[in-house]
Length: 127
Image 1 (spheres, rainbow, N blue to C red):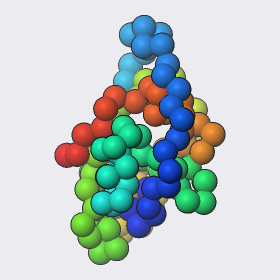
Image 2 (tube, rainbow, N blue to C red):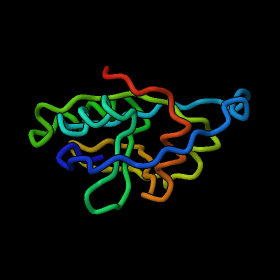
Image 3 (tube, rainbow, N blue to C red):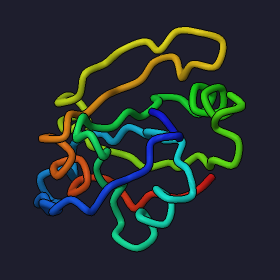
């Protein structure tokens, strides 16, 4: 989750069959984004791709996202919240982002998994 990374061009979304997820518990995710990524999110409904095509990070707690956003390099960034079905979340790589301004428990989705993520996530909101 790096606010300083601008979003690239949009990703083709894959809309997953919502009835499949009716009994699948959803998990909230938080992402710290800059104004460029926010504009992309508002125009496309997705967080887009990184210029280097590596994927995206989300914090699993609001406290972690707030901590990450508190770093001076992330000044002017906003925190967004979305949710994913647990079955989609399990396609990510779980990690602990350590450090003073780190997000703590987080999940990373590779570029190849982002269309699935974007197709299954609830509409992101700025919090």
